[in-house]
Image 1 (tube, rainbow, N blue to C red):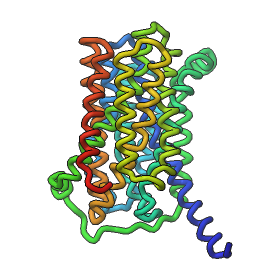
Image 2 (cartoon, one colour; image 1 turned 135 degrees about the vertical axis):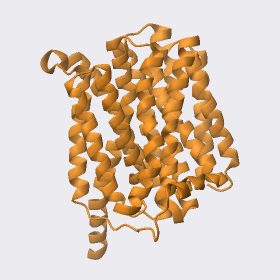
Image 3 (cartoon, rainbow, N blue to C red; image 1 turned 90 degrees about the vertical axis):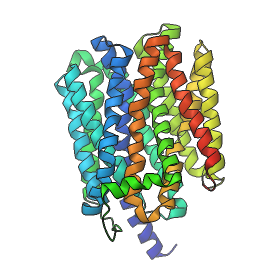
Length: 392
């Protein structure tokens, strides 16, 4: 191996590692499912009231995603990611002051704002490091790193709830402190990393950005992202409630269901980075959606632990690569409008608001099977989306 090749690889690693740590920080938003269950238990909230927390987090994707695309045109993608990390760190320190309803609302709001900015800017930042033919697999690996943070959240929260309460008084909220410190590390590393960015010739207005939804493929992709995130947030919020409702386990034990989801989502992201280099993304997408459909059927019909865990695992694995396939193909499809389309796709994460709200009301009305029914609608749309894609 030549010295120049070794130097290039070393330079690439020095740039990609801080970016992957940012993907880890991106996963902090998934703690909302675990945290909302603990807040519900601490404050005695209904399902509809508790589901307001994840809904509030993802509401900000509707407001901030498109303006963030415009901001990237002005200050660059790296600087925009740095802003998102600062907002995220602030949001994570807030719960150290208590776990009242208003404090948690403020924390989740800032967490949602920071994550909306981060997801809009970080994914297109990767295009400055990776060629288009490897973009899907690289974004999938980024989702794998993100999934590690998601997977660790319920474990750290349960550990804090059972171990740290007598010592620090934080209990499960120690999760926020640990992730806040990691956010500060990500800020330091990315700020010190030099990344050459391609800049747009002319900045688009918000109206011109929204006009991209008039292109059928982009609109289909936008709705697909909404369904993906709705299923993701819905499963990690509802899975423990299904276990509690049908088996009567306490939250600390039932919370492992969220861990099961993220274990399989993490495995799916890791394997997907390699599978997407070997088979058609469209075929892998179709297989993934069918796995989720089977998983939803198990959640709807079963009342023993093993098949429920199987269903949760199938949904986690199936949903692990949906985002990266949709996102990468949309960026390639509209390569001249990457910042704008990125904002639109991340605005689709607003599905994390729509689905939990609908699921909360459905669960209050007919039990957790109502929540499963709402998520199944999203899976069926993704099946339809698969059939509509000509080349993915």
